[in-house]
Amino acid sequence: METKEQTKFGMILPIVLISYFLILLNNSLVFTSTVQISQELHMNSLMVSWVSNAYALTFGGFLAFSARLGDILDRRTVLLSGLVLFGIASLLVALSPDQTFLIAMRAVQGIGGALLAPATLALLMDNYTGKMLTRAIAYYGATAGIGASLGLIIGGLITSYSSWRNGFYLDVIVTLILLWLSLRHVYSTKQDRTSASIDWWGTLTSIIGFSSLVYSINGTAFRKSAIMITIIALTSFVLIENKAKDPIMPLVIFKDNQRASALIARFFMLGASMSYFFLMPQALQKVFGITPLMAAIYFLPLTVVQFIVSLFVARLTFKTSNTAVMIGGALVDTFGLALGAYLGIGQGYLIGVALPMIFIGIGQGLIMSPLTVAGVANIQDEIAGAASGAVNTVHQIGGAVGLAIVSAASASITDPSAMIDHAQLWMTVLAVIMLMACLNVLRGPHE
Image (cartoon, rainbow, N blue to C red; front, side, top):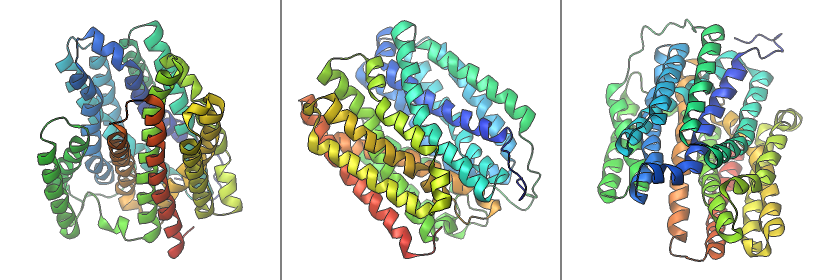
């Protein structure tokens, strides 16, 4: 744990950042390799969509349980378990002989990711406080920018010049490096958790509720039934958590206006961001006739700017406040999306795409870290994992819901230029809601 005299991060921060990059890389590999996978394993469009959906289903479903598990057991144990499961599943994905096996292993990989994601963020909260924590979370946000950029380029290179399987072998290599580092540098927290127990009913209803929510968005059959199951399961989940002795997601997390507003803002921010990262590369390829690798390179004005800006977030936060930087980022991000919708991709890449990307990159670079800080602000140590789990759950579900909304609103438009312009208009709507949630932080105590 950090003391007042601590000025060096040690190895915990690199372990957390590499873990976050591993999850980003995994997503990018799927985005860039679906065409090759479908051709090699003879998958139709329905089946190939489940290469992504199977992972999202288990990742979103098990997040709340995994986060609370770290509080009840031991952060190191959960982290190592997540790495082992993720690494084995990645290897089996790379070795997949057919589509059924591939999809099943992607689901297992999602469980590994669900164990890994909240454990890493909670490790930051366990090991750093004050300015060191703010700086650590700023670097965490910076990784989102450079990780997305590098992930798309690495995925594009692998897909263009070798087999998609090599991308998942790369996952295995990174996982082995993380395992070695974690075994050497991550220590047991040794907290007394003997009085805590696992909330099994809350666990069951959360897994059913969040998994069925993801399926109701990404699924292809029985979606109405999935929506009904989602409503019943999540309503039961809230009622159970309100009475449980040791809830997997303590509702006190949402009683603080700053935390609740930050989580809502993150939900809609990821909805707009995921939609942009998913739809814009397709539009660039169709409108300008470029390759997937070039589409990744065309994203550099956004991702590089986001990375650079993220490096200065901690300094800006200390000079002003976390809330001021968050609201400023929300304003710039919303402006960038609105500018893209107003100018249109028909203006050409430099004016219609690259220019708005610069503002979007600045906005996302400013807002990601402050949203994380506000999302876990003033939380007790014994529920730090649950709080980080709430951040990750909102992150995952927000992206899926936002993408579903934007995709559905633009699905009937066949012209690629008109489609992406219309989609950006809907992304702007999501961003405006994000901005309103950020402004709502001002209504109560805030940092």
